[in-house]
Image (cartoon, rainbow, N blue to C red):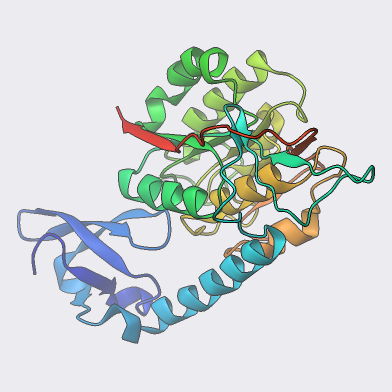
Length: 306
């Protein structure tokens, strides 16, 4: 058994597929979920190597849910025509020749711009790939959870996003009291996420002007909402899929500002479902414009690591 191996935990019935991040003294392994935002450690004797990840029930269940979510996103956001490069600096402006304003004039669309902070570099890269695939303008930064509040304080006035995603790794601590789930000190990174949400809300208090999506696996859902999040994890203190925050951000980006994001639709459209993510009524960030510009270069989504 070595670093990089795919494994499952025998004592948990192989419920989650992990990759070995680190081996300690040939007795303990530090694990990172391949699909779920989960960091864990385990005795090596409790691990079983997985040679074919697609053969495991855990991976098969996740793949089915991922495919369902992807189909929903594709249906809700039609692809941009290849010969139509219309974009604005403040957002992708996707158009098609068949689209027209009630006045009969062709129009363009400006999806909401996303600033995505992620405590995990691998998950951030997957997230950025999905933003790009769905033609959502996004700026992604891999940064430790403890540094997110300070970074947001500097970046929000500079980038002026419509949507902020604050995510990474979290979890209920092993050494907590069994009845102490209400205390934020019982969570690995929920306090860091709460601090970051507060910075975002100090910058923009209107929850429809700046949509905040925060949390990771087992995060303190109630504390994140009270701090000012529009959407947060995890109501049921369960593991959430790595792309659940991205799914919500894309939905917010593609919902017109004259419409409220359909809460049941967006929550049930996530891979983790109602136990994994919740939120409040929120207006979308997609804007329509007239007239249709002739030549505007499309900006690319960007990501950096700090």
